[in-house]
Image (cartoon, rainbow, N blue to C red; front, side, top):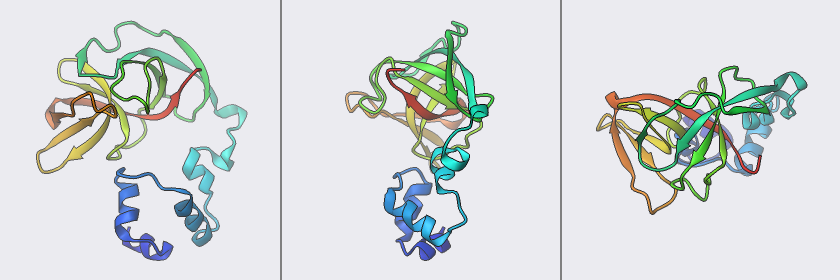
Length: 184
């Protein structure tokens, strides 16, 4: 990362914050990346689609699996069965959609929004995840890994909700949210 920061002529801390999930890169970062690495498909990095425009084969019928609370961890995930399908550009054959119940992630993610989740996406500190923990408890939160305590920190966007610390051994699954679908 230090080499990338030097090449882009940016501060190491700034570039590190992008890769740790603490900040999202802005247009200046992408411009510098395109300038220094002209053979890189920047739009592919940003959107996940080659040539920035999804081709017809990238559109898939994605199952809407269930509702997920945006609030405290609660039990009962995946008990309703498939609620339907939405047609979206997506390259992950395991992707699924969840309907958001609750306001702990608002205004970023609102009640009744749908979130596209990708099981193949690796963990990135600070991204939003569908979290499954403990006795089949689940919630939607921004997740940070606390390496010192061996726990995960579940962070709501809405300050009316509490941040939760969940021991690593209680986390069953983290599935990254890759897109929010509003008024879909």
